[in-house]
Length: 497
Image (cartoon, rainbow, N blue to C red; front, side, top):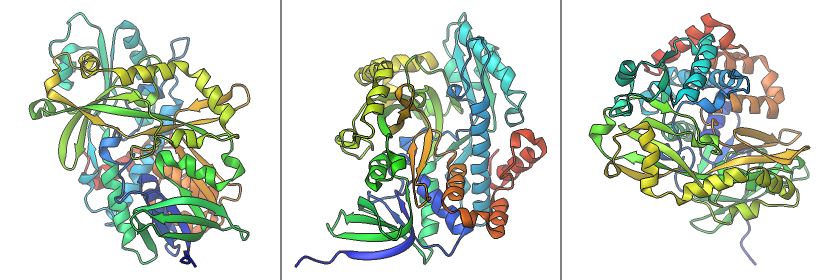
């Protein structure tokens, strides 16, 4: 007779030990400390995939500089609604982190967040006109007060000396600047949150544990089958609620659940690389996150930027990312991930989305074929004096963009994040990519409202939520006084400025 499979039971299973599970686990523990949680991670360390600092952009995505959030319209106007929404959500994240620092849950804010100016820079008359229109629209809004615009080359030289040195004096260039921008090390933040959760008697972290199956039981609970990758042993956990926050692998696990809401979803993987500066003298000359415009056909996460980072206490300088294609859904995934995700329920949306995005496929193949000298040519648009010997290649994380059913096209490719949950709220998965990490707190609070509706209606829950996030339920962009108050509190607690 074979060994009996070990069984256990908890209230909540969080699959994946990245920023999403860490955020959700922390919110649950603060709002409902009686809930038992198990966090299951396939790797032997926490935050090693998309949440790791070298695998993501690290920009506190608050729409201060990312031009893909403010599309230009045919009449020359600029839509800024998405930028306002993202800025609102990032302020929610900052308020939550502020609460955690004030309550000694996060001990050292400088380890995960630093103030770094956010800038947009464009080249050529057409794009200068676009940036001018964008500035006029955004600078009227409360969330973007303090934005500065210039075409003056002397002022630009003081802001971004590396970018202006040896630049053609006839070239048209313009930039905007927001000094309240941040660099966020989501890897450090995730590890700090999970370390805090691990210390709780009712929360368990299980590393090197791969989820093999997820099945609904007759009583409505979920049975999660897990294999220990070190010993080979299998076990099962029964749980009232399952959250799948496994980055690119979330789609594969969601499909195993068999919930009808998952049907029709597919995934399109996009890889990436950075150029990483190796010269400390050059690194010290740049102190900003400078975003440009994406190439035609490029996915939004490939918007080029010359990027000041703080990783493991050291200042770094990255340029990129350069997109690429792989059939892996995770950096440490399998080349069979994409084929394994194709089912009868999603094959039509995936084919339709593929046919509608041939330009994107062509672009990704072109990016894969680029040599180091080709990559340097892209950097030289930002930094004319760049030399190949000062830069090395750093492999970024994998992103899986959402493909979903569409009545007109059959299937569409979406850039962003999407929560897919069962009708009864007993299981949910987060699909997609940027700006997910930066907006994780708002996403997870909305998930809790959907999946724990009775608790979310209670007075105690609402009171605690308002204590953690004073602006919850209000629009900061419509309330300048409150916006200034919460920003000032965050500046002080997070040691920004």
